Amino acid sequence: MKRRALWQAGRGPLLLWLVASVLACIGWDLYADHALQILNGYLLLTAGLGIWAALGALLPVSPVWGRTEFDRAFEQARPRLVRPEELEHVERVVSFSPSNAMDTHMRLLPLLREIADAQLVARYGAGLNAEPEVVRERLGTELWERIRPRPEPADRFAPGMHLRDLASSVEALEHLAGR
Image 1: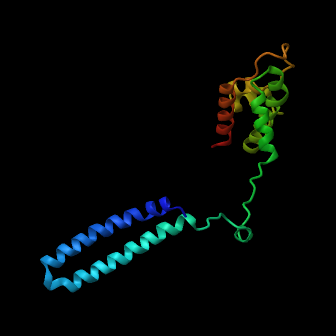
Image 2 (image 1 turned 30 degrees about the vertical axis):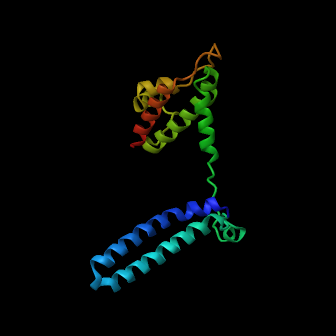
Image 3 (image 1 turned 135 degrees about the horizontal axis):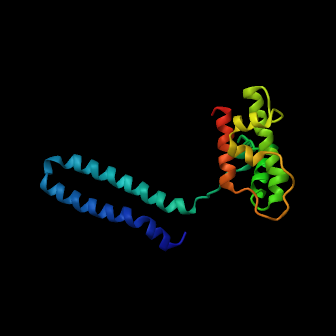
């Protein structure tokens, strides 16, 4: 180790030792009847400062390593989070649907119809195949107008369903589910 590094490591303990030595000499003169206690305290402090200086000099040169193969052998593997395919499918449908009307018509609306049908069957025993007026009453006019069957859009590249409309449709379906 270089001398400069040793000096920097031992500078703090050395300064404290010098201050302690001066205070021990002053205490020896002022309190001669407590000389033994002062000497014991001074020796204890000197030993502690010596250990501090030695550790300060040894730590920079001691080997430092990360986790070894032995350590890794005992680590438990973290389970990989697997996203369900259905979730990925829904995310893709939702991300593409605002881009154009054809994606909304071919991907998003069938998904919303499927969810609405399942909710209607679970709640009323009949799904979207019931009378249109009954379905409109049960779903609400706004949701029914969004998901009702209709022909393909004339302009395939027109904007699709806005995310606000999708959010209100999902809220209506959640309300239908009783959540």
